[in-house]
Length: 229
Image (cartoon, rainbow, N blue to C red; front, top):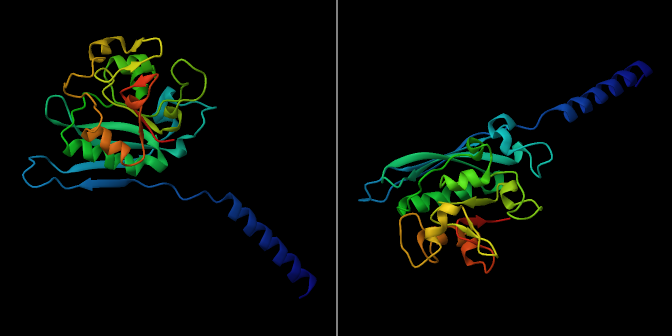
């Protein structure tokens, strides 16, 4: 190989290496999870659509310095039964590696006719956990510290979900109830719509997939909370 050919070969190799390094990773694509309704259920099929989510879409629920980036999260738009018995669409932001599993968990809740009052992403509440809970909102990702502490909550990773926060309140070690309008539901002998009990369809849908329920903790007790770090 003469000198000119060798120089051209080296330049070509170097350019190829730069292009290879600079080439962006393939963009994540949307995924649909659809489950047919059992015969005679009277329900429409369950449909969940999982999509990438941007920093703009996350609003102030995410910021620089959070433990995960938007590329590690997914937005799920899914079917749920409301307190009114009608089918509604809700949205959750969860970890990308939990998204398909979460979609299937909520299919179990849907076909189990577990009612959910509201399911909106938390930036609708200025990412204020207290405001979201008071509205009885079911939500997942929110880049914030644990309640009463400074460490990152599992919500900051999209690996925790709070469901029907009024009927399933958080009770601190000192006995403080969050949200305050959840106080009537501290008595777990009640069986009201939207309340979670050990062994019911909601608890089983999560725990059989390896999630932990905060309602089984000694202190604090977090009846609304499921997590899978």
